[in-house]
Amino acid sequence: MMKRILMSRLLHSQTSTARLFNGRSLSTGSNRVDDPLKSEGTETPNVKPPSNEKVLVLGGNGFVGSHICKEALERGLTVSSFSRSGRSSLKGSWAESVVWHQGDLLSPDSLKDSLIGVNSVISCVGGFGSNSYMYKINGTTNINAVKAAKEQGVKRFVFVSAADFGLVNYLLRGYYEGKRATEEELMTELPHGGVILRPGFIHGTRQVGSIKLPLSVIGAPLEMILKHAKVLTAIPLVGPLLIPPVHVTSVAKVAVSAATDPTFPHGIIDVYSILQHSQQKSA
Image 1: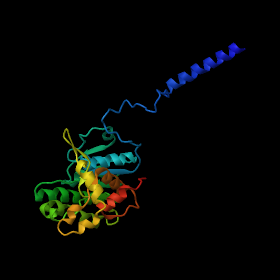
Image 2: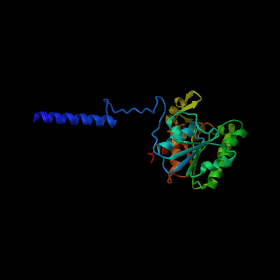
Image 3: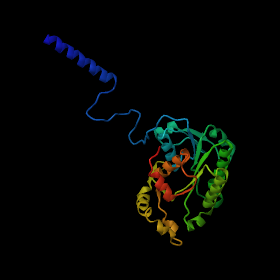
């Protein structure tokens, strides 16, 4: 009798071990699960299965735009990007989940196909150069996008603009005139669905070719100090220069919330409100 019991337990133990191997439940003494598709040093966000809600990111292959794409994917949204260069050169499995469109916002007809089925648009398009160029890239292109989105029935449009920096506004006149012209157009075309984000200096790790620029080395300490010193911005001339920087992930989080949350306030969201909204738990 004892021999039969021992044989029965031995067979049960072998069957359980086989199930562990076949079901990949074998533990090596830690809780780590190795993913053969994830390489060391590659940022891989927790991408959820896509939902029916579709977000189009204008300039999704740039510094701010790429973070917005990743944030939207992490929330389970269907994400597409539109830019002059098309597909992002940035590495990461997240890029495989984005639909990349190539076109030119100076030719607004090239945007129409990308707007099919889109619920909301987030624009990060902008740049520097001569005053005429800056107005064109920060103003004309975005104004074209706002008009095209309105024609296609898009109800929510988020524009990543810029905070006022006093004298800097004059030095970069074309940049700010273009931004403000877009803001005016957005509030005219989508008064209840337009959201304008006005961050200051956006910091984080910026990829320029093969070089990574650690902008947070300067930006993070300044943000920690200046976000509690709003009163200083009222100082004549130099006050606007004391607007706190904001991390790129904070901008991305707020941009996606503004594009998808119907309770998010429309209109202008300044840097202090961006910092506040970024601390709220996303849906």
